[in-house]
Image (cartoon, rainbow, N blue to C red; front, side, top):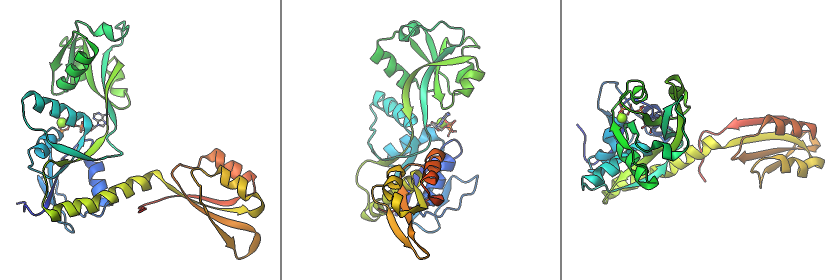
Amino acid sequence: MTDSSRLRIAIQKSGRLSDDSIALLKAIGVKLQIRDRLLIAHSTNQPIDLLRVRDDDIPGLVMDGVVDLGFIGENELEEKMLERQAASKRSEFSTLRRLDYGGCRLSIAVPSEFNYQGIQSLNGMKVATTYPYLLERFFIEKGIDASAVMLTGSVEVAPRAGVADAICDLVSTGATLEANGLKEEEVIFTSKAVLIQRGGSLPPEKQALIDRLLPRIDGVMQAKESKYIMLHAPKAQLDDVKALLPGAENPTVLPLASCDKTVAIHVVSTETLFWETMEKLKALGCSSILVMPIEKMMG
Ligand code: ATP
Ligand code: MG
């Protein structure tokens, strides 16, 4: 059973968002014991319970206030919001963070032999999709007279099965489209995973926990983008070396005990150091050039 004083978070049980969402929770210090078949997982070190559900259910659970937080793709969130608006249901929530995983786009694709000549080619078409509200909003915005055919799965086979003329589905690499003889023509929505919070105020201790976790999420995301760079550089070339280091306004420059012509430089960089730059540093006389991942950061 769940206890209402514990923070309730909905995550996708199994699918494209599950592993990254769990990894993020673990990275921010939430210890979890997940048993595959169970709907609920309790944190062993924080007052947090996870509700593991299909991603389709997450926006509703947050908007109905059944859970406090949810990890969800923006595509699913926006679709459910439009669906609830159409049914005059409340859709109160706030987006706390846009996350760095779950990236994809919702696109219209047509059979590769179709002679697509721009958006007007969609007029009169039947387009199969799992996202009818997003698709219809796109048709209205663009003044296209086409219809959405709702399918909950296997959208990509709809044209071959004679169910629709085109499809509107999620794409990341485009390999699935290609394998099904389809080509991507219009991107109608770009999406990433987000962390959302239910509307209304939460008990102070729950809100305080969220307020402590958010900077940790920022720290984890920042750390993933950053690198710690260390190298030895000839003192005489210091300015040229600094100019080559990406995003390094204020590197730490340390003397070396054994040699007064060389210094050690340490810098946290938000960009990666490319091989080409490392070669240029070497040519300037630098040595022991190390680029290391950062696990956690706090500003
Ligand atoms: P569920 O059983 O939970 O309903 P699902 O089949 O609807 O799962 P998944 O395929 O696991 O969902 O995708 C979940 C979310 O992952 C998508 O809604 C989207 O936000 C994101 N995503 C990222 N890349 C892709 C992709 N290439 N194809 C589909 N979804 C992707
Ligand atoms: Mg789903």
